Image 1 (cartoon, one colour):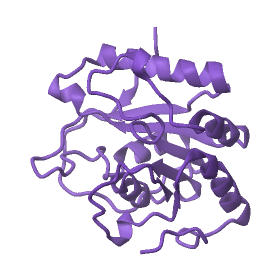
Image 2 (spheres, helix red, strand yellow):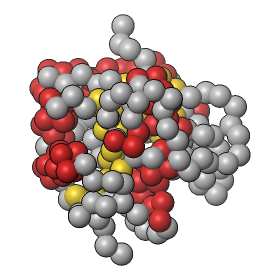
Image 3 (cartoon, helix red, strand yellow):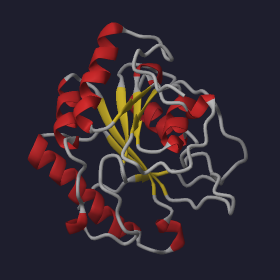
Image 4 (cartoon, helix red, strand yellow):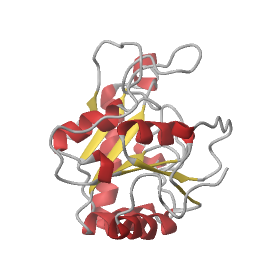
Length: 223
């Protein structure tokens, strides 16, 4: 049986926290958005055979894992609550993703966290977990003793960036062209930006070695 993705099904409450810390900090992590960052965008009812990893993603995750970083996928999947696919169907997709990472790159994910909730009619989170809210990152950090201040969020939209910053992580925009609105604010400004996965690992590892403080990356995105 595939491991079912963890979800955050608590009653939605208004307000989005801006900074959070795990109660016990022991390990840094890289949080990765699924659709658009780790994978090419998928249709709502995708079959496992339709999975296509972004170029260089598997190799980059293998290099990051080799340094001891935890790897955690976080993904909005409102199709679950909208009835576009079932939890069992999504679990098959997740199992295929994890199997591919294991077989081709020797990578085992630390966790795979899903928000199944729909946004408000205005497109804002109606829960504490759907990005740009940081709930998925915070929940995983508490479960796995992750030091959020030493961790990174890698995503392809500014909603991912905002979620990472609100959780207290450094945030890296994988600029694949999927972000179209470009609504700017301090919380939606990435610390760094890369055009592809081949640049992600060197940047994260260089930053770890230099022990830069949040907001001081030399590769910060210019306005």
